[in-house]
Length: 230
Ligand SMILES: C[S@@+](CC[C@H](N)C(=O)[O-])C[C@H]1O[C@@H](n2cnc3c(N)ncnc32)[C@H](O)[C@@H]1O
Image (cartoon, helix red, strand yellow):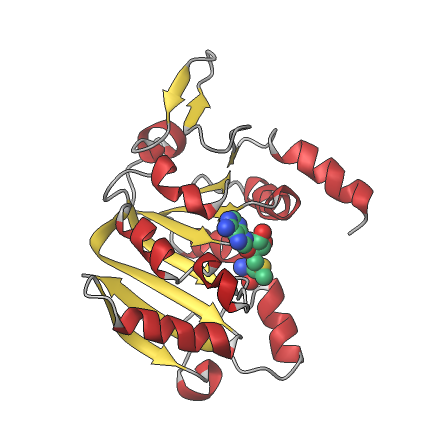
């Protein structure tokens, strides 16, 4: 994508009706039609979706393929794609808008701030698809399945909520197994180092994202882990 396109999308993304962001990135409010500040934390269903449905997050959503795909397949749920990159979110948000999906929103924040934007027990499920693996040991706390991130998810997930991780990266896969083995508050339900070899993918889990297509074309194996908040 050219720099011009990126900048244009970056400017436009905040104008889309289904995208939420705060300039300061740590101020969890939206403005209502009258310009009143409303606290978004704990109020996604009443303020944004206007319908009480389970809330499902896609973290590091990029173009939000899972968010839009799952939202079409499951109108009984509300989906929120989260990423820091506005030009990528623009693609998913524009698509959801064109499709007229009333159960999709996007939030442009750093995932580190998730607890500022969602209340305790507000989230029913999380998808993490092909996150950056942050391969250097010194950056392992930035991996989305590191202890600090799992602690943050505990603050927003309901008990019994499922977390899905798909990754092509063997280091991130092994790291995730090790971290989960140390936790008493999460339990692995299913894990495979060769997703397409071992599992008959469900309509949900077989969706190929932009990055998954690239990894498969490069001959990489896709791994999958499903775990639950106890
Ligand atoms: C490799 S891409 C994967 C995108 C998409 N899930 C896919 O499979 O095509 C990783 C994405 O994670 C986002 N990301 C990484 N760390 C993040 C963080 N701490 N907060 C928000 N977004 C983050 C990046 O902006 C990028 O869009």
